[in-house]
Every structure is written in structure tokens, then in C-alpha cells.
Image (cartoon, rainbow over all chains, first blue to last red; front, side, top):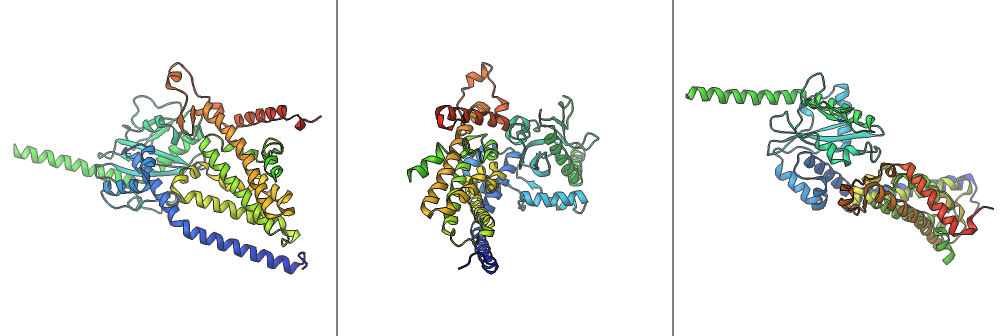
Length: 246
Length: 204
């Protein structure tokens, strides 16, 4: 047979492509649910780490099933776990203003901690993470960050350096001119309640993450200030009822 | 047969002698775990695509042979990536290797071996040639990763090997080792050692 004729070439390549497409479709169908489960468990372990239920390694050790079980037991209301792809889509919506803050995901736990996601652009690719707020909706309980392709040892420290993450605990989300919660190059002043130190040698990643946090926390401003007002009113009511009793 | 297997690992090593696949060997050698998984993935891809291309070698139309080879290689790379993502044990490693698994398709070793060997040889020797070339690549990857993880992070396979006492005495991990330029320096040293042992590789 003449393997160099046009007809042969066209038919041959068509058959090859169809076979390859079929194999890929079957494999992706079969493995899809397993991959989705892994991704969900990864996201959940990041949320739980941010909320200070345990270190990231702990969730890896106990495995996917137990991590998800722990999450389901401790969450106070069922919330759909948003994947990184979901966050990316939401990020576009936040930027063009087509999403209300009530529609954004927030994971509230039985112990009063609320975790909100953040997403944005680092130096080489997306960076994202989770910030946990204590029951006063002001103090940060903890944070966890991840990235797609930041430089290991520099920008990669947002994920790999526990000391960077640890700075967030105890800081406050304050809606003032310094931004709700900023990462500051050269170090945040000691008396600044809503600033943490940037990573040396990773200015662009730090800046990107800082912008991501600012964009997302601003998107939650309504919900967070409402929650704070409710807390204030509750506190006042408790006070007035106390004085009446006297 | 023995020649087919040993040559790519020593005398014709794809990295140190043919100088192919340098890019990924700089990128994925920060830690041993990642390098190990990358090595296995490349072995799977080179072996299987050489096998398939060798089986098809008499039917492939000559004018589109590169494209057909690319489709086969791409298929294998995507399959490896999909499997790594599907299992709990390999998911985290696949995540840390990120784009580099997908980029195996651009690794010159894969296409180079198909063009140079698989298209002219029977399936079994082609499979062995593919596996051996992948192994030759993987071996260098693991050597580089060993030094980079030890000097850069003080760990091996994630376990702390440099004692805390040394850090207390003022020892610090070398930050340069983590960056790709150091991998290139290390690779240069490996090529140097290789050539000084095997004199036949030296240019006159």
C-alpha cells in the first residue's frame, strides 16, 4: 500500500486522533470522581488549617476520608466547598462587581470561627488561600495560602514557611486607609494591627497576595460589618437587661 | 540487548552526554520526592510511546510522522498526569510538580528516541530503549535532587537529616541551592565527573 498518498494520510490521522480521543475520554470519565475527591479534600484541609484545627501535615497523615468527616462534623451550616476553579470565576465577578457579598462562600464552624477564601494573581500564576476570623468577626484566627507556580524558596514561602502564616494570627481586619489586612514590604510597624511583614526576596508575590486579600476582604465588607453590628447590638441588649434588673 | 539498556544509562546518558531534557532537570530537582515521581513518569512516557510508535512504524505516513508521534506522546503524558491526580498518595506530589508533568511532552528525549530508535526497530527493543533512556534521565535527576534537598533544605525525602544541633551552632541552609542556577552548576559538575571517568567521551 502507498502510505504516502493523501487519502491514506487523511484517513490514518483521523483514525489515530479518534482512538486517542476515545481513550482519553474513557480514562477521564473513570478517574474524574477520584480526582474531584482529592481536590475537595485538599481544599478542605486548607480551610481546616486556616481555622487552626490542625497543621497541614496532620490532614495529610489522617487521609482524605477522615479529613472530610472532621469538616462535616465541625461546620455549623452546610456550605458548598468551592474549588480553586470556582474561586477564579468568583474573582472575575468580584472585579466587575456582578456578585453580591451574600453569594460569596464563607465557612462558619461550630466554635464560632468563620473562614473566607481569597484569590488573586501572584508573580507567575494564581495565589489563593483562606483567612479565618474569630467569633468577633475582627480578630484573625489563622490563615493558609497556596499557589500554582511561585518560585520555591522565595514566593513559595507563602505556603511553605509556617512563620509567614503565623503572623496573621491575632491581627485584626480593619476597614481603614491601610486596607483591611495588608502585607507590607520592609516590615509592618509593630503597633499596626492590620499589617504583616512581606517575604524578603518575594516582593511581587507578597504584593499579589496582599492585593488578593484586599480585594476579597473588601468584597465581604458588608457581611462582616453587619455581623459586627449584630454582635454590638447583642452586647448592648445584654447590658440594658442587666441594668433593668438592678 | 544489554547494550540497548546500558548505553542510555552510562555512555549515552540523555542528560550528561546528549544534553537533552535540561530544562525539567533544573526545575523539578528541589526535593527527592518530586524528582523520583518525575523520573518514574518520564520512564513510563518514554517506554510506552516508543513501544506504540514502534508498533505503528510501518503504517505511519512519512509526511506526518512527527505529528503522529506527538499525538502518541501527548496521550501518554496526559494519561500519566491523570493517574497521578487520581490517587491520594500521588496527588500532593503531582500538585507540587504542577506544569512539569505536562511539559514532559516537550522533553527532547521522548521525541528523540522515537525518531532515532523506535521507528527503525522492533517493539521489544524499542520499549527497552525508551525505559532505559527514561532511567538514564531519572538517575541524573535523583543525583541532583539528593544534593539540592540535602544542602538546600537539610532533609532527604522530607525527613530531617541535618541535626538541630548543627543549626543551633549557626549552620544555615543554602538558599542558592534551591534556585535553578545551582542545579545547572551541579549538572556541570556531574558532566565533568562523568567525562573524567570515561575518557572516550572527551573531545580531542
